[in-house]
Length: 200
Image (tube, rainbow, N blue to C red; front, side, top):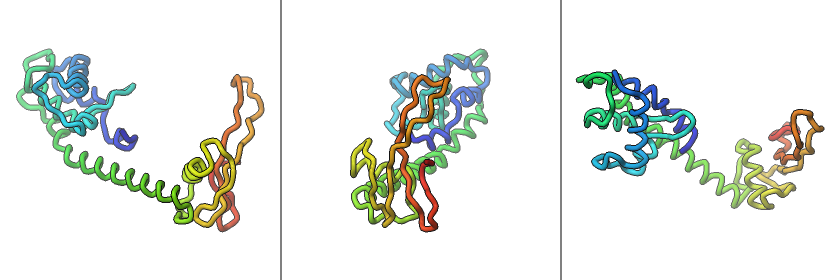
C-alpha cells in the first residue's frame, strides 16, 4: 500500500471509538478477522476492499471501507458491547459517507503513481527523453543502476546533462557507531553551474 494512501486512513481504534459502549480490543480483533480472514463467512470482500479496509502495522489503520465493515459487524451482533447497541451511530455513519471521496482520492494517487513509474521506465530506456526539470538524485540513481549496474559508479548523460554517481567516502570513525560505511551519491551540475542532487 502506498504511503500516501495510508495517510488518508485513520487509526482503527479512533474509528472503533465512534461506536458507543464498545469493547475496543475485541472490536479491533473482529475487524482484523473480518478483513484478513473473511470471518464471519457471510461477509464477502473484494481484494480492493480488503486492501483499503485495514492496514496492519504498529498503529493499525482503517478507512471508510473498514468503518463500513465495522457497521456490518455491529448490526450483525458480532461486536462485544458494554450495553445494548445504540440505534444510531451518527459519527460512524458520517465517516462511512466519506467512502466515495476516499476511493476517488485513492484512484487519483494510484494513477499518479502508475504515471510516475511509467515515466521512470521511459527515461530508463531512453535517458535523452528526460527533461532537465525532471532530474533528481532518485532518477539519476535509478537510471545509472539500470544502465551500469546496481552498485556501479560512473557518468551518464540524462536530459542532455552529464549525471554522476560517485562513492562518498565513509565519515571519520564516530565513537557511537561501530563501523562507518561509504555510500553512493548521485549528482549533476545544473545550467547555472550549481551542484544538484545528493550532497558531496
